[in-house]
Image (cartoon, rainbow, N blue to C red; front, side, top):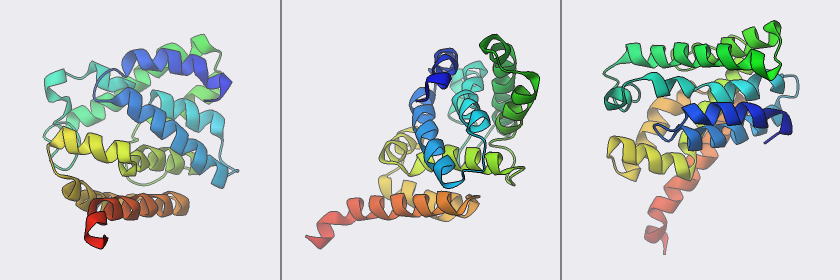
Length: 195
């Protein structure tokens, strides 16, 4: 993690102790860094703070409803939206204390606000932010956690990722990485059939 992001992480992680958000955020941060390496014209000083804060608002959602407020059978889409707004509120409170100016804060807010509820990219930074958030699902860690959340088998997780999430990537690099992760996971799942 970049040294300038450590203080943001210390603030964010206090709010990320639900729904495996602390783990998810660390993977998403790493994936955002890799995406940024492929899009040097994007601003990491907006994308990376936004990634660290984007899911902090889940801490404000009733715990008994969290696992039903996202995913393929979302029963509470209004809570999906609420977690974005709560994440913005946490960022609004914390970022000025960390020395961010108003212009930076507004740009960070624009990535957090709508990161799950808007599909189209509003900027290159928004594309990278959204793709890093989704790309975590394709990692072995993401595959496992999704299976646990929804109590589904690994082949079902991969089916969802291939047929519903993969078409939503916004960057070429993000989609290619997702495909590599997906093909690797499929091979791992079916390895015994080849041996």
